[in-house]
Image 1 (cartoon, helix red, strand yellow):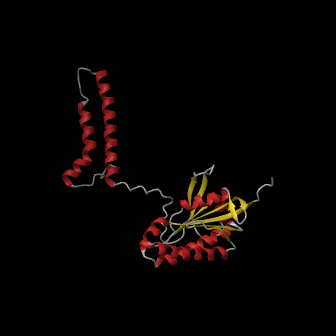
Image 2 (tube, one colour):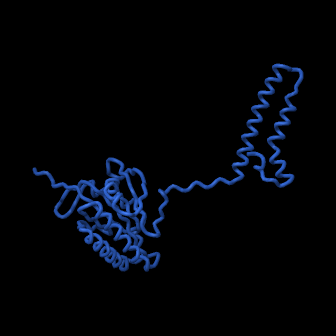
Length: 257
């Protein structure tokens, strides 16, 4: 039995965001817009020497002679699709996600199969609406050849793919909500938190000093308790910034740095 033909190729996978919702709202209008979106994609793909080999539902798969050609087609397509979608009503606006992978595929007539195709489809699912995600293999091929910035999303486990795939997102389009990557910023601490933190540390330090003095007092003069006087002085020193704030309105951190 002959072995199936295999080759290394760049795969682009595109898919419509929220397609079922759009069809539910307006089936006729959505199908018409899908045809228009596919026309824009087709022009961008063929302009870079690509070939569409599969149209399934609202998706599209294409192969390219190089990873760079695939990424340039994806950028061109998303730029044109962004302009095209801008004039549509917001609830009916059609956005696409695109994934690009460089991998081994199995040739089946005019179709391509295998993990190389499956990874491209999974990358598409990671992308934000209007965005593009690349595999690490594609990133290595194009990182020094295009001016568009990248966001490293790290290794991602993907359904039915044996090993995690490192994912990079392309930063394109004014509406793409990049967040380097999707980690909420840490809120700045309130200035008062730092002040009370210092007061708490000073109070704990004073307690340690008083405890040491108490041990010395009990060991040297168990019948003459004198530790309360230095303890009182330390307490006043720790609370002095608070007293000044309450009586004269001075900042809590005055003289406490």
